[in-house]
Length: 170
Image (cartoon, rainbow, N blue to C red; front, side, top):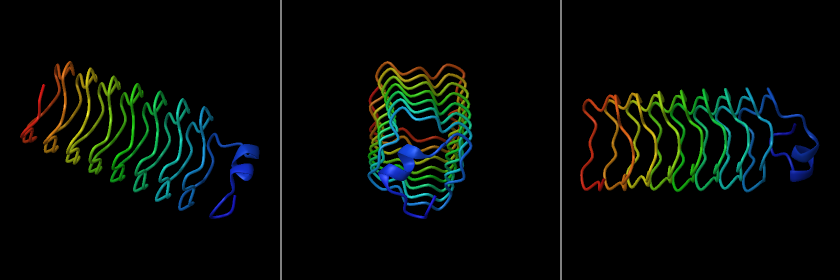
């Protein structure tokens, strides 16, 4: 695919395991698509609709996902290391075992998301909305969760060593 593929080119492409690193997919729809194991390293994914997509095992390290919609997507085992996703929505998303080390996700929505066993070390999640989210066993040392809304969220066996939760409601 070209560096800036069109919606039509994406619609016709096989995306499972695809190499899409560095691509610009701004504002396109990948709703319900199979992107298992795809590489989207350093990709521009601003305002992309990934609702219901299968991104399990995908590599989105250093990707820019500002205002992207990933509601109901499967990101289990995916890597979002150092990704940026300000204002993105991960509602009802499966992020079990995902790596979100050093991510910056201000005002992101993780309502009812499953993050059991996820690695969120040093993640900056200011203004996080994570009502009824499951963080059981998540590694969150040094994470910043200030100004968040965490009512009904589960942190059983999560490592919150050195994490900050200032002005956060639970």
